[in-house]
Image (tube, rainbow, N blue to C red; front, side):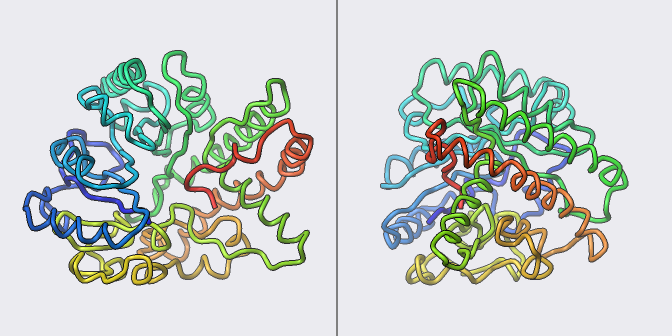
Length: 368
């Protein structure tokens, strides 16, 4: 199982899209009691193969807690960070992370507009520094896409950065996290979809031309892997496999608050629909007791793209801040992405069958 472990609710940035405010979140700022740590140990011992994702806030504001966890637990570890303090992490810890997820949205102007002037340069400098002294297994650029960014330009910039190699890139749309629907989003979304089409074409072109690289654009990898599984099922005459939401939240990924409460989605901690246990000690067996208790509902469950999409973000699906009229405007982007991946899938499958690309290239850790 994957556990998003709130290391702190505090953050050193004030990003325009973020609703994180440590003063109003439903948990203490940090887990600083010995009792909490002992409960966490007991909880993790119940899972034979746990992965901890250090989450916040900005997790590196509580580096002593991270170091203690990494020194104490036999786990796989992932760091999700804004990377403004990444250069302070000791090499021995950097090299133990299965993945480091760096919050960076694309080009300098885009990042600085959303995260504060000078943030882009600081993040890039720190990524260069840690790449220079540590064997980083998987450095992932994870961004927030919202108006007025140009998704094709942002992703191409990160893919082709002259100084930092990002192994994978993905982004989350800033949609449905508050009300009302933004008119600026409605004016922007068609241009976003056009940018996705250009990006899909570039991704396919890079595969088709020598040396036949599969660029690590995570949404494309995950949907292609699912389409490959669909092809296999159809060839065997089997039903299509059921698909959980892409992030795994509520299925094989859960959240642990700083006070030891257990939830599904880290964005929904404190909401009744999200809470799974009042205390880690209340969970007898995480493998059996946590999955499939918080799952997406309508309109996702009856959607024709459910078996490829997996369902919209659990928080957005449960809260539906944009209402019945606004929800379809969110899913316009998803339907378009699914259609684009179906469009290029025959060409991708042909390259795979010819041995020019490898199946393993599509198996990002979160792919289904």
